[in-house]
Image (cartoon, rainbow, N blue to C red; front, side, top):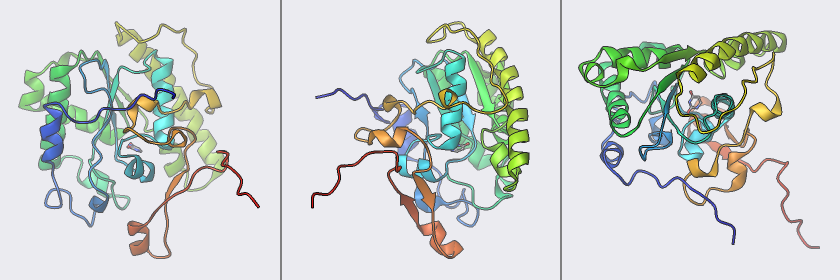
Length: 281
Ligand code: URA
Protein backbone atom coordinates (compact mmCIF):
# COMPACT_ATOMS: atom_id res chain seq x y z
CA UNK A 1 0.00 0.00 0.00
CA UNK A 2 1.33 3.38 -0.94
CA UNK A 3 1.60 5.93 1.83
CA UNK A 4 -0.29 9.14 1.09
CA UNK A 5 0.24 12.22 3.19
CA UNK A 6 -2.74 14.36 4.06
CA UNK A 7 -3.60 17.53 5.92
CA UNK A 8 -4.49 16.57 9.50
CA UNK A 9 -7.03 19.39 9.69
CA UNK A 10 -8.09 21.66 12.48
CA UNK A 11 -7.78 19.53 15.61
CA UNK A 12 -5.45 21.74 17.58
CA UNK A 13 -5.97 25.11 19.17
CA UNK A 14 -6.26 27.95 18.41
CA UNK A 15 -7.48 26.73 15.01
CA UNK A 16 -10.08 24.27 16.35
CA UNK A 17 -11.96 27.11 18.06
CA UNK A 18 -11.67 29.36 14.99
CA UNK A 19 -13.31 26.64 12.90
CA UNK A 20 -15.99 25.92 15.48
CA UNK A 21 -17.09 29.55 15.64
CA UNK A 22 -16.96 31.55 12.44
CA UNK A 23 -18.98 34.42 10.95
CA UNK A 24 -22.13 33.55 9.02
CA UNK A 25 -24.80 35.47 7.18
CA UNK A 26 -25.03 38.45 9.50
CA UNK A 27 -21.41 39.29 8.72
CA UNK A 28 -21.24 37.90 5.18
CA UNK A 29 -24.61 38.78 3.55
CA UNK A 30 -25.74 35.99 1.20
CA UNK A 31 -26.55 38.51 -1.53
CA UNK A 32 -22.84 39.26 -1.76
CA UNK A 33 -21.21 35.97 -0.69
CA UNK A 34 -21.89 32.34 -1.55
CA UNK A 35 -22.24 31.34 2.08
CA UNK A 36 -24.31 28.31 1.08
CA UNK A 37 -21.03 26.54 0.22
CA UNK A 38 -19.69 26.99 3.73
CA UNK A 39 -16.53 28.68 4.95
CA UNK A 40 -13.21 27.52 3.51
CA UNK A 41 -10.51 28.35 5.98
CA UNK A 42 -7.01 27.83 4.70
CA UNK A 43 -4.40 25.64 3.01
CA UNK A 44 -0.99 24.70 4.38
CA UNK A 45 0.75 24.32 7.70
CA UNK A 46 -0.91 25.07 11.02
CA UNK A 47 1.63 23.07 13.02
CA UNK A 48 4.16 25.79 13.75
CA UNK A 49 6.40 25.11 10.72
CA UNK A 50 5.14 27.81 8.37
CA UNK A 51 7.60 30.47 7.21
CA UNK A 52 5.55 32.28 4.60
CA UNK A 53 2.04 33.61 5.01
CA UNK A 54 0.26 33.96 1.67
CA UNK A 55 -2.94 35.99 1.48
CA UNK A 56 -5.35 35.32 -1.38
CA UNK A 57 -8.77 36.75 -2.13
CA UNK A 58 -11.73 34.37 -1.93
CA UNK A 59 -12.46 30.71 -2.63
CA UNK A 60 -13.97 29.62 -5.96
CA UNK A 61 -15.38 26.37 -7.38
CA UNK A 62 -12.41 24.03 -6.84
CA UNK A 63 -11.99 25.25 -3.30
CA UNK A 64 -15.67 24.59 -2.48
CA UNK A 65 -15.14 20.96 -3.48
CA UNK A 66 -11.71 20.38 -1.91
CA UNK A 67 -12.41 22.35 1.29
CA UNK A 68 -9.01 24.01 1.08
CA UNK A 69 -8.21 27.37 -0.51
CA UNK A 70 -6.14 28.06 -3.62
CA UNK A 71 -6.31 24.63 -5.22
CA UNK A 72 -7.64 25.61 -8.69
CA UNK A 73 -6.10 27.82 -11.38
CA UNK A 74 -4.95 30.49 -8.94
CA UNK A 75 -3.66 27.83 -6.55
CA UNK A 76 -1.34 26.15 -9.06
CA UNK A 77 0.08 29.54 -9.99
CA UNK A 78 0.71 30.39 -6.34
CA UNK A 79 2.26 26.96 -5.71
CA UNK A 80 4.72 27.57 -8.55
CA UNK A 81 5.58 31.02 -7.22
CA UNK A 82 6.40 29.58 -3.79
CA UNK A 83 8.46 26.78 -5.34
CA UNK A 84 10.61 29.33 -7.18
CA UNK A 85 11.32 30.92 -3.80
CA UNK A 86 12.35 27.51 -2.38
CA UNK A 87 9.15 27.11 -0.34
CA UNK A 88 7.64 23.67 -0.95
CA UNK A 89 5.93 22.99 2.36
CA UNK A 90 6.50 25.71 4.91
CA UNK A 91 3.64 28.00 3.98
CA UNK A 92 0.14 28.90 5.12
CA UNK A 93 -2.43 30.33 2.75
CA UNK A 94 -5.35 32.41 4.05
CA UNK A 95 -7.94 34.29 2.02
CA UNK A 96 -9.24 37.81 2.53
CA UNK A 97 -12.78 36.40 2.55
CA UNK A 98 -14.02 33.18 4.10
CA UNK A 99 -16.66 32.70 1.41
CA UNK A 100 -16.72 33.14 -2.33
CA UNK A 101 -17.59 36.71 -3.37
CA UNK A 102 -20.79 36.91 -5.41
CA UNK A 103 -20.78 39.65 -8.04
CA UNK A 104 -18.04 41.91 -9.29
CA UNK A 105 -18.06 44.77 -6.85
CA UNK A 106 -18.75 43.04 -3.55
CA UNK A 107 -15.10 42.41 -2.69
CA UNK A 108 -14.23 46.09 -2.77
CA UNK A 109 -17.34 47.02 -0.79
CA UNK A 110 -16.43 44.69 2.06
CA UNK A 111 -12.68 45.18 2.08
CA UNK A 112 -12.71 47.28 5.25
CA UNK A 113 -15.68 45.63 6.93
CA UNK A 114 -14.76 45.59 10.63
CA UNK A 115 -16.46 42.26 11.47
CA UNK A 116 -14.92 40.48 8.50
CA UNK A 117 -11.53 41.94 9.43
CA UNK A 118 -11.93 41.02 13.11
CA UNK A 119 -12.33 37.30 12.37
CA UNK A 120 -9.62 37.31 9.69
CA UNK A 121 -7.28 39.05 12.15
CA UNK A 122 -7.81 36.22 14.63
CA UNK A 123 -6.37 33.85 12.03
CA UNK A 124 -3.40 36.16 11.46
CA UNK A 125 -2.88 36.37 15.24
CA UNK A 126 -3.15 32.60 15.63
CA UNK A 127 -0.75 31.86 12.81
CA UNK A 128 1.86 34.40 13.90
CA UNK A 129 1.63 33.11 17.46
CA UNK A 130 2.49 29.52 16.50
CA UNK A 131 4.71 29.91 13.40
CA UNK A 132 8.14 31.38 12.64
CA UNK A 133 6.76 33.43 9.72
CA UNK A 134 9.53 35.28 7.86
CA UNK A 135 7.54 37.04 5.12
CA UNK A 136 4.00 37.82 4.01
CA UNK A 137 2.92 37.75 0.37
CA UNK A 138 -0.39 39.31 -0.68
CA UNK A 139 -1.81 38.31 -4.05
CA UNK A 140 -4.03 41.17 -5.21
CA UNK A 141 -5.19 44.50 -3.85
CA UNK A 142 -7.84 43.15 -1.49
CA UNK A 143 -5.33 40.81 0.14
CA UNK A 144 -2.80 43.65 0.52
CA UNK A 145 -5.49 45.79 2.10
CA UNK A 146 -6.35 42.99 4.55
CA UNK A 147 -2.75 42.80 5.73
CA UNK A 148 -2.41 46.59 6.03
CA UNK A 149 -5.59 46.72 8.14
CA UNK A 150 -4.22 43.98 10.38
CA UNK A 151 -0.91 45.75 10.82
CA UNK A 152 -2.74 48.88 11.95
CA UNK A 153 -5.01 47.03 14.40
CA UNK A 154 -4.08 46.75 18.06
CA UNK A 155 -3.52 42.99 17.70
CA UNK A 156 -1.32 43.59 14.67
CA UNK A 157 0.65 46.24 16.53
CA UNK A 158 1.17 43.83 19.41
CA UNK A 159 2.25 40.95 17.15
CA UNK A 160 5.39 40.72 15.07
CA UNK A 161 3.39 41.71 11.97
CA UNK A 162 4.87 45.13 11.48
CA UNK A 163 8.43 43.79 11.40
CA UNK A 164 7.71 41.21 8.71
CA UNK A 165 8.77 41.85 5.12
CA UNK A 166 5.60 42.38 3.11
CA UNK A 167 5.37 41.66 -0.61
CA UNK A 168 2.37 42.67 -2.70
CA UNK A 169 1.99 41.18 -6.19
CA UNK A 170 -0.95 41.01 -8.62
CA UNK A 171 -3.61 38.36 -8.06
CA UNK A 172 -2.87 35.16 -10.04
CA UNK A 173 -6.08 35.26 -12.08
CA UNK A 174 -6.06 39.00 -12.64
CA UNK A 175 -5.18 38.54 -16.35
CA UNK A 176 -8.09 36.13 -16.81
CA UNK A 177 -10.67 38.39 -15.18
CA UNK A 178 -9.38 41.73 -16.49
CA UNK A 179 -9.07 40.64 -20.11
CA UNK A 180 -12.81 40.11 -20.54
CA UNK A 181 -12.30 37.13 -22.86
CA UNK A 182 -9.86 38.96 -25.18
CA UNK A 183 -7.01 36.46 -25.66
CA UNK A 184 -4.40 38.97 -26.81
CA UNK A 185 -5.11 41.18 -23.83
CA UNK A 186 -4.95 38.20 -21.51
CA UNK A 187 -1.50 37.30 -22.87
CA UNK A 188 -0.30 40.90 -22.44
CA UNK A 189 -1.66 41.09 -18.89
CA UNK A 190 -0.10 37.72 -18.03
CA UNK A 191 3.31 38.95 -19.21
CA UNK A 192 2.84 42.12 -17.16
CA UNK A 193 1.79 40.14 -14.09
CA UNK A 194 4.74 37.75 -14.37
CA UNK A 195 7.17 40.66 -14.63
CA UNK A 196 5.70 41.97 -11.36
CA UNK A 197 5.93 38.46 -9.86
CA UNK A 198 9.63 38.33 -10.76
CA UNK A 199 10.13 41.45 -8.64
CA UNK A 200 8.09 39.88 -5.83
CA UNK A 201 10.14 36.69 -6.01
CA UNK A 202 13.40 38.57 -5.57
CA UNK A 203 11.98 40.32 -2.52
CA UNK A 204 10.66 37.06 -1.06
CA UNK A 205 13.93 35.22 -1.60
CA UNK A 206 15.82 38.05 0.05
CA UNK A 207 13.45 37.94 3.05
CA UNK A 208 13.64 34.16 3.63
CA UNK A 209 16.26 32.98 6.08
CA UNK A 210 15.31 29.30 5.97
CA UNK A 211 13.71 28.18 2.69
CA UNK A 212 12.80 24.50 2.30
CA UNK A 213 15.18 24.25 -0.67
CA UNK A 214 17.93 26.46 -2.00
CA UNK A 215 17.37 26.95 -5.74
CA UNK A 216 18.80 29.36 -8.26
CA UNK A 217 16.22 31.94 -9.28
CA UNK A 218 14.53 31.03 -12.53
CA UNK A 219 12.44 34.07 -13.40
CA UNK A 220 9.14 33.80 -15.26
CA UNK A 221 8.99 34.54 -18.95
CA UNK A 222 5.92 36.05 -20.62
CA UNK A 223 3.63 33.09 -19.90
CA UNK A 224 3.45 30.15 -17.47
CA UNK A 225 5.28 26.98 -18.46
CA UNK A 226 3.85 23.61 -17.37
CA UNK A 227 6.66 23.29 -14.80
CA UNK A 228 5.56 26.59 -13.27
CA UNK A 229 2.14 25.13 -12.43
CA UNK A 230 3.01 22.29 -10.05
CA UNK A 231 0.61 19.91 -8.35
CA UNK A 232 -1.08 20.86 -5.13
CA UNK A 233 0.73 18.65 -2.60
CA UNK A 234 -1.15 15.70 -1.09
CA UNK A 235 -0.19 16.94 2.38
CA UNK A 236 -2.36 20.04 1.82
CA UNK A 237 -5.65 18.25 1.15
CA UNK A 238 -7.99 16.41 3.51
CA UNK A 239 -7.45 12.66 3.90
CA UNK A 240 -8.78 10.59 1.04
CA UNK A 241 -8.87 13.25 -1.67
CA UNK A 242 -8.22 11.60 -5.04
CA UNK A 243 -4.90 12.39 -6.73
CA UNK A 244 -6.56 14.08 -9.73
CA UNK A 245 -7.82 16.86 -7.44
CA UNK A 246 -4.22 17.93 -7.01
CA UNK A 247 -3.38 17.94 -10.70
CA UNK A 248 -4.56 20.09 -13.56
CA UNK A 249 -7.37 22.49 -12.76
CA UNK A 250 -10.75 22.72 -14.49
CA UNK A 251 -12.32 19.77 -12.65
CA UNK A 252 -14.86 21.94 -10.83
CA UNK A 253 -17.21 24.48 -12.42
CA UNK A 254 -20.39 26.22 -11.44
CA UNK A 255 -23.13 25.31 -13.89
CA UNK A 256 -26.77 26.11 -14.52
CA UNK A 257 -29.13 27.82 -16.90
CA UNK A 258 -30.08 30.57 -14.45
CA UNK A 259 -28.08 32.49 -11.87
CA UNK A 260 -30.08 30.72 -9.14
CA UNK A 261 -29.27 27.29 -10.54
CA UNK A 262 -25.63 28.26 -10.96
CA UNK A 263 -25.41 29.26 -7.34
CA UNK A 264 -26.71 25.85 -6.33
CA UNK A 265 -24.73 23.69 -8.71
CA UNK A 266 -21.10 22.68 -8.68
CA UNK A 267 -20.10 20.17 -11.33
CA UNK A 268 -17.07 18.09 -10.42
CA UNK A 269 -15.69 15.95 -13.27
CA UNK A 270 -12.49 13.90 -13.37
CA UNK A 271 -10.24 15.46 -16.07
CA UNK A 272 -10.24 13.55 -19.38
CA UNK A 273 -6.45 13.12 -19.10
CA UNK A 274 -7.03 10.77 -16.13
CA UNK A 275 -7.29 7.20 -17.44
CA UNK A 276 -10.15 5.19 -16.03
CA UNK A 277 -10.68 1.46 -16.58
CA UNK A 278 -12.69 0.78 -19.73
CA UNK A 279 -16.03 -0.95 -19.19
CA UNK A 280 -15.95 -4.63 -20.16
CA UNK A 281 -18.18 -5.65 -23.06
N1 URA B 1 -9.11 30.65 -4.83
C1 URA B 1 -8.81 31.07 -3.59
O1 URA B 1 -8.98 30.34 -2.62
N2 URA B 1 -8.31 32.30 -3.44
C2 URA B 1 -8.11 33.13 -4.45
O2 URA B 1 -7.64 34.24 -4.25
C3 URA B 1 -8.43 32.67 -5.75
C4 URA B 1 -8.94 31.42 -5.91
